[in-house]
Image 1 (cartoon, one colour):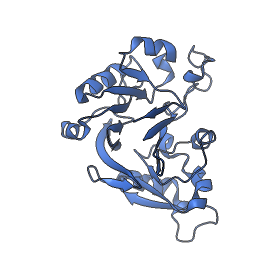
Image 2: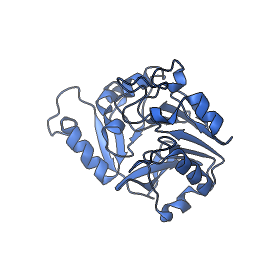
Image 3: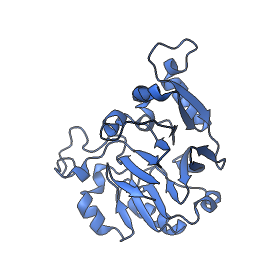
Image 4: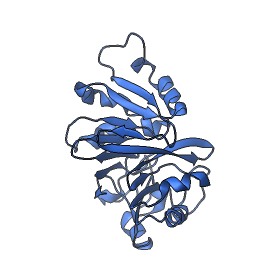
Length: 253
C-alpha cells in the first residue's frame, strides 16, 4: 500500500498570501504546502482522504485513474472545498464519499446542487454515505477503520488503514480511542508549529508525545503552517523517527 501526501499545509497554505517571512519566501519546494489531502492506494484500489480547494492542482501530476472512495475527516472548507473538481473522475462512475453525520450535513449545505432532485447536467456524481467511528468500511482490498478525534470542540474523524493511521486537525483524542491505534507501523498526524498554542490544533511537541503514546514505528507530521519554520531546519530538530512530510512525498506501508 502506498500513501501519497498530496497536501501538507493548513487552511491558508504555504506561502501565505502577502507574507514576507523566510518560509513563505523560500525557494525550496519542500516549503510549498497546499491544503491537506492524501491518496491511499494499492494496485487495484485508490482512496482519497479529504478533497480541499487545491485538489485539481494536487492531482495534475498523478496518474489519471478511478477514485474508488473519498474519505472526509470534517467539513471545513480546506478539507472539502475541492469537491466540485472531482467531476473528471466521475467518467468512471459515481464516486462514493464517506463522512460522519456532521460532515455529511456540512457537504449538503455547501454543495446543495450536487444533491438536488433534478441535478444540473455535469455536476459531480456523488454518493454520500454516513460513517460511524469503529465501524469498518471495505473499499476494494483496503479496510478503513474510522476513529474519533477532537478538533477543539468539534468531533471529527481519523482513519486507520491496516498499520497506517492518518489523523489531521486533532487537538485531543479520547482515551477510549487509543486501543484502535495499537501496533501502528506508520502514523500521520498534524503538527501546526513549535510554539504559540492553538485552540484546536496540536503543536509539534504534542504530536511527538502522541506518537510516543501510541508507539508508532515512524511518524510524519502534516497540517503545518509557515510558523513551523523551514523544512530542512525542522527535520534537523525532530527525533530520527519523526519527519516533517512534504507535498508529493510517497511512502510505502
